[in-house]
Amino acid sequence: MVVDRVGGLAPTVVIRPNIMQELDIVLLLHKRITGEITPAESAVLESWIGASAQNACLAEEYARIWAEASEHRKTDFHLDMDAEFGRLMARLNTTEQRPPAKVITFGTKLLRAAAAVAFLLLATWGYRELTAPAPTVLVENNLSTGSKLAELPDGTRVWLRQKAKIEYPVAFSSSERRVQLVGEAYFEVAHQAERPFRVGLVHSGMVEVLGTRFNVRAETGTDEACVLVCEGKVRFSPSRKTKGTVLTANQRAVFNRTTQNTRFNEVSNFNELAWQTGRMEFDSTPLHQVLPDLEKHYGVRIELQDQSMGNCPYSALIREQNIEQVLEGFSLIYGFKVSKSAPDQYRLAGGVCQ
Image (cartoon, rainbow, N blue to C red; front, side, top):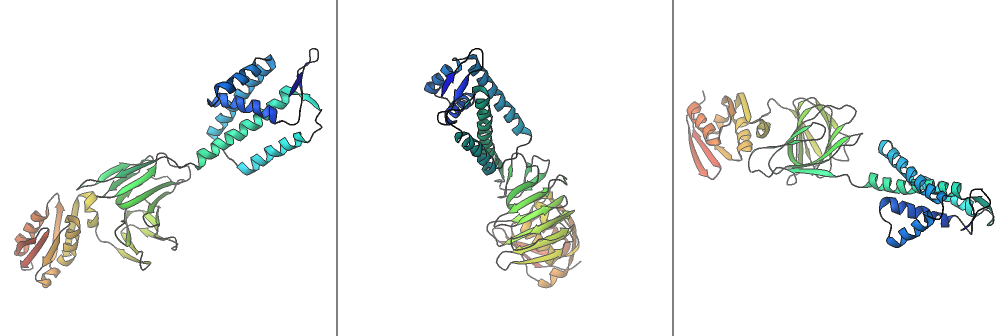
């Protein structure tokens, strides 16, 4: 690069043989802004800047270009890396094909090169920012009993059952709110029609929220995934091969990954959510339906010696009672003789329907 000054005119440069020499200066300016410049490179750049007031002015202008481009990225960044890089290289190739002795204004050409390289470097950085995995939060319930509440960035509340875990981004995207669930959880989703809320399930599958309150069970040790809707509606897509089914309040769907079949049924109560609500309610419910709910909630086995007693109706509100207290109530109502045959195993003998 040869610089010539004629009278009071601006300095000119003869391109010998291409613009890459000027790009070297631009890259040094970029390294200084980003703090990546080495002492040796800094000495070269400072020497160039100090060579003329024009060079110093160009260095300041490059810093301004970078600052404005960075500010633009914060508000609206759209990038086609291949297209932009192709356009830049086309401009450089066109310049290289010009007659080698052509005299051009140094400041204008270098400023154009600075703007082009600033955009390319910024685009590369922006592309990395957009494609890098977003930081996430992982919440696990390692408690031996009880649920654990996780409050998401959008105001959604999630209760995790024991051994359940949920992972979600620090900040949801502008197009959707997606979380990943392993285990069982109860959701109260904050309404945002413009940003769908989606729950990814273990072993694939998804629940898309069209309402507000529902329960999802998708554990690693079972072939089944279950969704129970308490309020509103959801779309349950248990696998990539299924189109999804809309469930409304008081409906349950259970998908079996082995058979690829889904069972649907209406529910009369939400006792299976007692782990979250802390209560179970029965209204003239046959004992043969009551006992499985108790077994699941308390993690026990209950044997009914006289199977005909399974048709006896049972009405009660169970809240903050242990299993021994519940079975003692059975003894008072039906005259059962309650015995404990093994740890967490109970036997109900005798009894009379009331």
